[in-house]
Length: 381
Image (tube, rainbow, N blue to C red; front, side):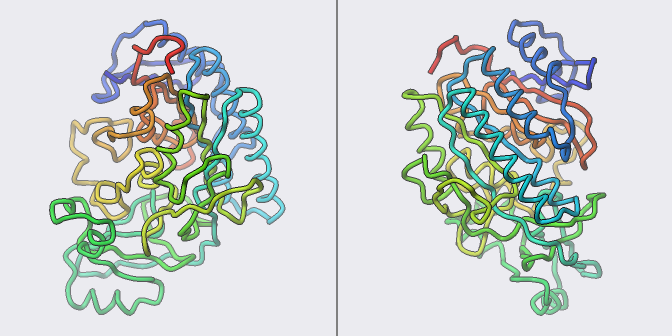
């Protein structure tokens, strides 16, 4: 059973991750993780201390759990660029500070640290208005570039195919062909998928005004200290090959692309064909599972169909199951994940222990840690 520890500063509660119900748990590891959370309150998504929180929390957890693998996400520069009007100098300083935190983690932990960028940012030009369709358009807060389309009329198709802000409208069959799927794989794909041009984005329920967006990134940087990678789906296998010989960490820098990297890197494919990942669930899963999970996780699925009264995993966003085949699940040794990106640490990495901020629409509600495994002995590699 996976359990979650909710921390709202001076108040903590343990719940069953799948049901969300309160449980009693007092194992030594639960006490250890509670202590880590209490010592490191989250400062906020855009707070200048946000990325330092990742490093500090990870180092504290390493001292007490002794993992062989760590997955870190540094996202302050992504949220700040996306929602705050910054000067070029401010963005550069934020980028340098993010790299400095990764370097501090590597130096103080002794982990060989592989740095991965999720792709650069571009100015948000204008939203795309899909109201007035005879059919249904579905957009996710996790995606600005893709929207799902259902039940379109001939009039809708004429309007969309000539829309100046759309790069393309791809059918379910085209997506299946692009990713090598069969008819049985398309159940969670939209009937059509609208793809926005650079700088355009689909309106969602987000309450925040967008300043910048993830730029379409066919390739993203992976630091040159990881050999044998040509795609982000190669990272899992390449890292697993090194684990056991040395301790390794993956440090994900959100909102940074090839043009932002200050260390030598390999430009790796970030999707397939016209479909490139944004920082979100499908990109994380491509990295952590070594495969494309677009059929299950994409910007156009009607997630409201899963929003039932007793939805499993109520603290895990859209997810109703925990993905299998992750790097943390495959690695037999101890593992941790720490990041200032809500939900993705505990859902997509499969690590034994995940510590993450609990924030929604930039509102800081505290922290959450998830313990998936308590049975690995000390020194397990």
